[in-house]
Image (cartoon, rainbow, N blue to C red; front, side, top):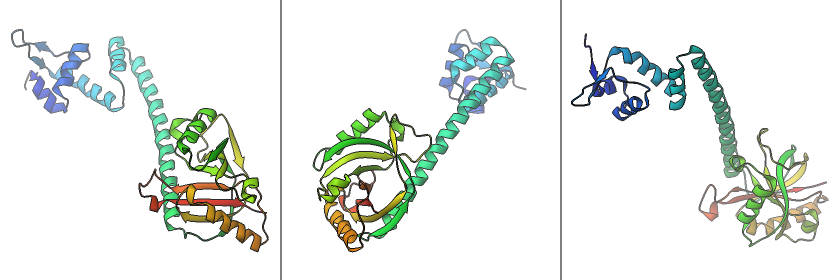
Length: 270
C-alpha cells in the first residue's frame, strides 16, 4: 500500500483544490505528514484522509473555516456537538427563509397568470377578504416621480427591504372620486401577503364589495375607467363606499413594453 500521497494526488482523490489544501496547511487546519526540505512539496499519509473527509463534510454543512479551527484546536467532542447544533439551527432558519421566498414566488406566478388571463375592460362585482397593508397617507399627483413616493413608504413605515416586492397600490380618496379628480392620489400602500411581514405601521382594508375593472396601461391611463365605473354605479344604484384601490399588476418590474402593462381599479361600493 502506498505510504505517501502528493498534494496533487490528494486533490484528485478528494476533489479538493490544491490551493485549498495549501491554505489548510498555512492556517493549521490540515498539516501534511511531511514537507520535502529541498522542494517544499507536501506529502500526505492516510492519517490525514479521515480529517480531510470530516473537513469536507462540515464545510458541506456550511460550517465556516474559523469554526473548524475552533473545533480542532479544542479537541473536545462537546465543541463539535455545539457547532453541529448551531449549524442545524442556521440551516433551519435558511430553510424557513427559502420557504418564505417560495411562497412569494408562487403568489407572484398566480398574480401574473391572473393578470394575463382575466378579461380586460369588463366591470365585475366582487367581494374581497380583509387585506393587511403597509400604508402611507401621501398626496401624489400624476406626472410626479412615483419612485420618490415608494422611497417615502420605505422610510416612514420602516418597511424591510426584502419584503418590498409585494403589490404596490395607490388610492384616490372617496371625495376625489366623487368629484372626478382622478389625477390626485391620497395614499400609497403595499399589500402584506405574508404573516411574518411586519412594518412599524400598517392598517387593514376591511372585507367588502368592490366594482373591479382591469385595463391595458398604468396610472396615467386610469381616468376613463374611473368614469366608466361611476357610470356603472349610477346605472345600478350603487354609491362610493371608500377610497379606491389602484394596482398595476403588470408593470416595469415584469416587462419593458408599456403596451403590456395591466392595471386594476377596485372601487368599494354600498
